Length: 395
Picture 1 (cartoon, one colour):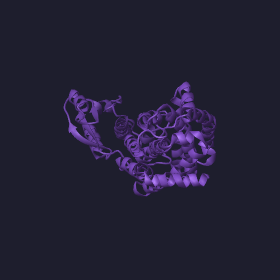
Picture 2 (spheres, rainbow, N blue to C red):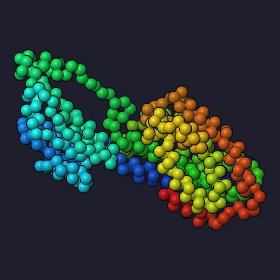
Picture 3 (cartoon, rainbow, N blue to C red):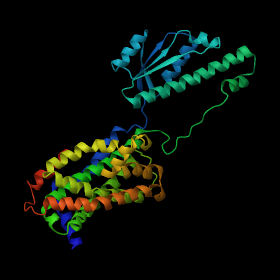
Picture 4 (cartoon, rainbow, N blue to C red):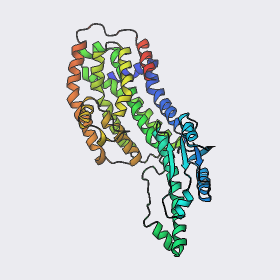
């Protein structure tokens, strides 16, 4: 009986254009579309302006090093600080370097000179990259100037002067993603959003199709038949999309595809309770799809993928864990694929998904049955029109 239900649902998917689009086309299309935005591994050639008020040999050397750095692109040389700030305000540049007058003289006297780095704080990604690139160059030139001063005034060998100026040095080793590319960081996060939103849309559409019949008898078996039929197709398509991103976009995927698939399967099962509750609240597929679309961004921002979990208020964290399972999927999914996390590292998240499903499933089934068992109207509107609306909301 269960296998027959699965075959029926599979046939229905292939006979329904909106569902076929959501399961076969959307995973590859969305993954490559959004992944293409971050095709460049580095954020390079950021436009900046320079104000050299010192006009010394040292300041010209500093300007030369900045101009040669591939992370920034010097597009303006200005004469006044107000012009520098104005260029940033008008979005002509994303950062500015102000070399103050008397820099070289201050260093010769053993005093501290100053180079001011101005960043456009409205975009933290660009601002942090500008600051990191300029700060590295300034520190390098500053250390070189200090070594020369110590060597000349102290009459000591160059190597000893270097050891005095740089009493200790820092080394860095960037793990998992040496290039620090946004492709590696954001693309996997987008994939988790697509898995969630396409599941909400496609599975919701499949349940709305005959929700009255589903609520009357063998409710759980019919729902799982829909889920397995859907996931058998879209799970494979997302696996193919991730492999293609690894080959085409060179996303550094080193972890276990099998473990990532297991986690994704547990998450998709955990989405059944919220889908049933939302289908009970919203009587039309249009309202359901609109709500799911509206919730995509808040759910991603509270999933601790972008913002670290230790910075979230404890009360909010408890509420997020109780109401939605995405927090136990998005970040661990990236850890598996990019960091190569083991089963031991993510077993707590699998347990969280299992607990969420076990606790919420009976509640959701009760609400769903109560909402639709007595209704004789299994469909509100044609499946094609509803499916089209769901597909448009997801897109």
